[in-house]
Image 1 (tube, helix red, strand yellow):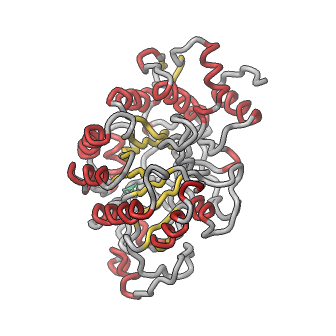
Image 2 (cartoon, rainbow, N blue to C red):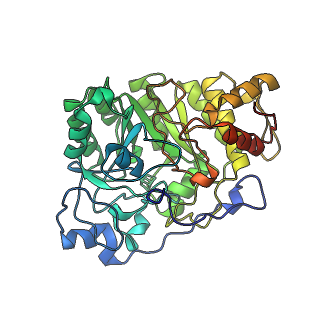
Image 3 (tube, protein in one colour):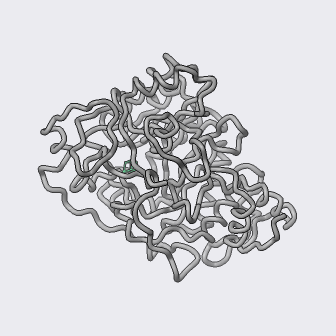
Length: 416
Ligand code: SF4
């Protein structure tokens, strides 16, 4: 586990069973010294990359850029055989998550994100942790050579290109996508785009579709406009706007069609359970899906001092989201208390119990793979929790996991 387990124990919320708005204020970013801005330090040294680069903060990152280079999750690198290591409870990941890379890094400053711009003061872009793990940088041609050798029998059920906020992001996404579909049939391994709406146009969305992408997602991340502004906009000197994200989300709906677009949402950054589930309902009503993440205080981020989402809050939202997304329950059939917490899931107890025991609701949510529509290929092993206290299960929960989940939900029905 050593290679994917990140570093320190997070703060926990001992006073409450949910993370309230008032306690989730991010730190304000500090000023970056001039000689560290825009990757100047890496570009000035101009070290040429030599094959795979494994993040190592004691060594200056070489000068690597997309589209020749991309970063990939530790889980994808292990599955691809580029890195050694094992993952608790799973043999591999089913999604090849790629991330565009540049010495300047992402130009946004999202408060919960390990890739944010303010980190250039102390860590080169290629060395930054993101969703709790390191992201080795690998030549794109090497990745394609490995997967193209036998796509039909690949462990990957899907590939995903994650854009970042950078002036070259659109063009390089097109190039990476084209390189992939030139050699690998998207029918064998479909492709998702995790977009960066801030710099995108409707034509860009159309182009990803024309080049063979299957699903288009928008990382809203924050569940309300106020929270978005606090964590991704003016509140942290970051360029994103809620309205622009919705504009591109609606373009994706028009261009990709029903069930082929969606939004990422992080739970527990200060929104209420009602607010996040209302958003889930709005997305379903548009014809899309929500992909959920449990807030985890990423080391080095502007929220690394704040508590991870309490498991009770997370499990309630996880279960309710699954019911809305896949079981036809509507948010207005559910009941909430005065603090917005779920009090009733809108289903008779026996039916609810059946859904809980199936366990799928508690698995990682994301774009589907080859098993079934409600099982995500994008399993992101331990991207939002340590294996010792799993938030999103990257595998089918076992009996002992189900007992724990029921305790967290405070629905103590015995599991046979
Ligand atoms: S735009 Fe994405 S990668 Fe960049 S800081 Fe925000 S969340 Fe992180």
